[in-house]
Length: 337
Ligand code: ACO
Image (cartoon, rainbow, N blue to C red; front, side, top):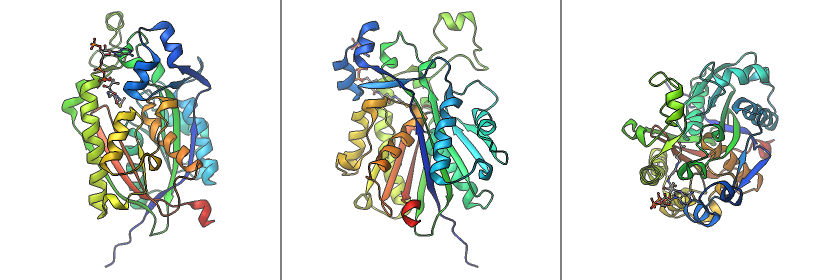
């Protein structure tokens, strides 16, 4: 009996970036740092910061509405919402449920997905499984993050690196010669200690002591994460190529997680890709965690750098530690009419 392969692709995308821009020069005013240090170490010039009344679901809502409009899909047609975030509006209920209500996606199931900055790619891989299995037709995946609320603005080692933002994509079945060709998920919990927020969960509930010890903020061992990231990007990209039976020469475009330009350049070099074929916006947004890949992908699409039929790799890494890769033969729904 022939097994039917249902190919899944991204048929709509939307993003949101808060209005307020915080530059390295602004940070110099309050912190013992400099534009030169931040830019030379990370490639970041500025980042976006939410308004006082904005939280993760507010950002996810705008990105999702734009993605649905781009796909020509009504909220009532969505079967499943996956919100990848490390900064939910609150510990529970899931931010995906808040989003489901505000979107009016009355038929949708909804859950959050926690996989560090890799969450968006994890979300697309998970969402695609529902469509391939025939249990959903339309899946909305969002990566939305309010990092500015969980970083310690007194810690120059971390606060200069992150920013806020959101992205969303609509997944649907696409023609058999397009869509996701392969994917991989990785995790190594032994490295969880290198990037975490120690308090605020069941192990160390938030208390005046945890606040005094500054444990309710993101903590990171930058050097360890850097070493891991370089390996993870390489593994994610080469593994999806291997699984699809393709080689580096077949790659048309790379959309890497935007944490640090040095990590991105290393990944591009390994794939032998010139930087014109790599999405980069870390200079303007910093590390927006789960929002970084959809923000970078959207920009590449808007500027015409990704075309129908291109082999596009999405690759990322993050807290967990986690990493993941996706290889998509791009389906341009608009070109196909
Ligand atoms: N301004 C000025 N000096 C600084 C700053 C700053 N903002 N931050 C740190 N320094 C100092 C340090 O204190 C250190 O001084 P010391 O040698 O006297 O102790 C010095 O600069 C050098 O620090 P290094 O750690 O060696 O700098 P490095 O070149 O490794 O760059 C960085 C640091 C940018 C953090 C890098 O290690 C990195 O990008 N790591 C990966 C981080 C990452 O990708 N995180 C995201 C993970 S995804 C997720 O899930 C959130």
